[in-house]
Length: 339
Image (cartoon, rainbow, N blue to C red; front, side):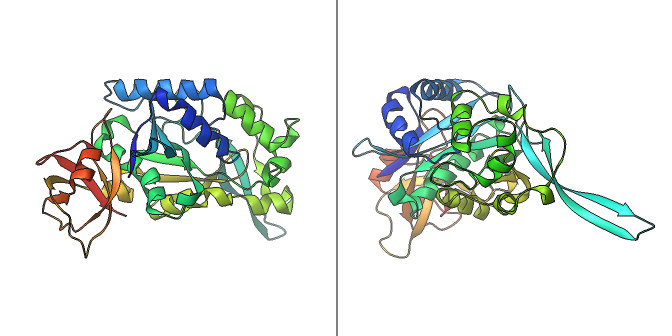
């Protein structure tokens, strides 16, 4: 049985294994022991903290096979993007150039460096082992953290954003980076992302052009890469688009991948989830459907996928194994949402 739970320092070796296989561009999951230790310490402190508003907290979850102890995935949430430093994006804009005497009126696509999204909560660090990509466990790995937000709204902002990894090839080259960022840094895309993972994106972002970039002046390959998704990040993109996230307004400053944005209250797993009482028993063998189920706790947060024959307004019947994995008993409450 796969269960999502808060990560612990004892998970370091397994998290390092996951990080080593994550695609270039996932700088929030660096393949470096020191940075991963910092990430795990920060997460443990955040889960333990008493919080009344979103601040510098970061929450890191792992997807564990509770039978073997092996980790099959991970994901995270930063309570406030750019809490200690600006969170940079390129904003898609349209400039109008007009000449009355010539009766010419042109609309031109430009990119403007901004930190409009600073202060929003940020979904990060998504990784799921490749055999699980097209299964309900990818949904669990991504959406169960949204159920955590639903249970602890005071810890998060009114809006949520996430950066989706953009296009790059097997050699670590990105058409968008080569056309824009490489003009300011003597390194390829993979090297730049590795440096950001080890240090910070901000110091590189501050050296990016602060004047608008006229998109028609970029090579065709760079224009075509804007807003495009890396094949290994497609599952993340698809899940969050079904959750109600929107794109088109912002792109990543390094690889041009889309930055998704949603009002927290409008996200499907938050808006449609329900808190219901638990009964322990044998769920119906037929006619059920898959649900994400979480216990709504903090440091002992748990979430899993279960086949349930639940009727809205009624208690939900969980098997003893599912109830034990969630740490709940008869009469306790769980939060659930349909897969």
